[in-house]
Length: 477
Image (cartoon, rainbow, N blue to C red; front, top):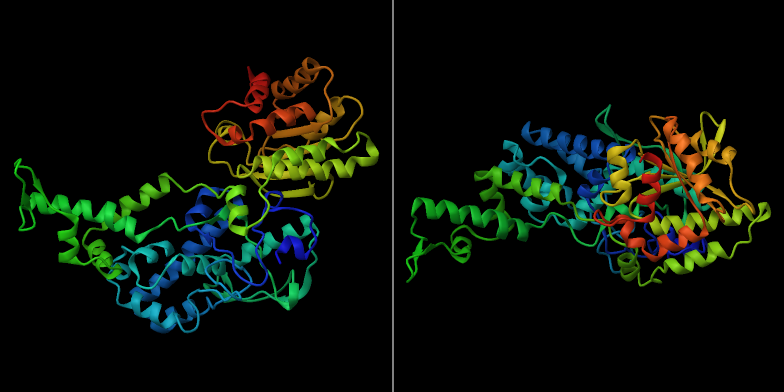
């Protein structure tokens, strides 16, 4: 029983911004700190700040020998079931640094020279350097630390998708950077089957951890040790028949060991190697899981963009079906533009409620058209207006969309309508708006949506040109 089925949302995973988790167990995906950093949005930056601040407080306690403080910090990351992510095969149970494990993890940190000397800096470093810490524990810890933003996200998604919430629900520990302690509150949350639920954005989860101790050991630490032993002419150097010299990785493992304790010891002696590994990972962040990959893990229906398009085309033009049209377009765009556009909000009030926007997405693209757009033009958000008109849209509709723009919100929007009988005229009106410095608008009709659906993967690829590129060039060239 997944969230979508329990609440009768009539949506598949591709039409949802959050992970459609099962309510009776866990889904085997993990929240990655690197994925949060890669988003680079106001919401994700808040999460990054919480993660960095919390772990710096833990390390400060380690360096200061304040064992009680550190245990209190880690023990507050008790095992929680409301996220439904991780390894559990039966009832969701979590694997965070909680009661029963906080002490052992603390003891590992307490005895870690990497923590005391500053080699250990980020939460995900523990997956490489601290024994018994794996991707499930990192994921659970991250979810707990960013619980505050996740609760806000859950509330937004519940309002967006029409999921009922219950008031007076205990929030669980929320990390407060100002007081440097855990706090708690009573909040609104969904409460299916008598248990609270906290939703997680699907753009944050990965099938496997980004930091892998085996990869780090074999492809970063051992090559550096080979270089050092060859340079020093140690006893591990072998001279082959062709006079070439080598040091085998097996001989290094035999000498130093190959477990996580050995990795930690070698890293303490070679901290630059860890920095190089992390830099490499940051430069090549793992991409978000596709809707197809999520559907496979969930054993759910594989998304078909053509089906979403058919539902849009099936809505009769006219004011009577304006809401149905907006909902159908929203489902299509959510699936079509993911992972470039995320965190949708409908009927978003702007300027203290004096204006209301049909749809607004966060621009979280790392490649493709929307990434290019954000690098060259103000586009942290992408605004969408839907017009189910029987006639062409005109200047008032374009002015309505451009009126949503601002330097802080961004100046790019999409107006979706049923048909454009005079493309030259509508393009000219959009160019006038761009030349006046009021923003950039692309008008898409049913035929344009069909083109985008036919080549939807190209939208997210840097070296592929799409209809969106062409329409934007018409505004500025």
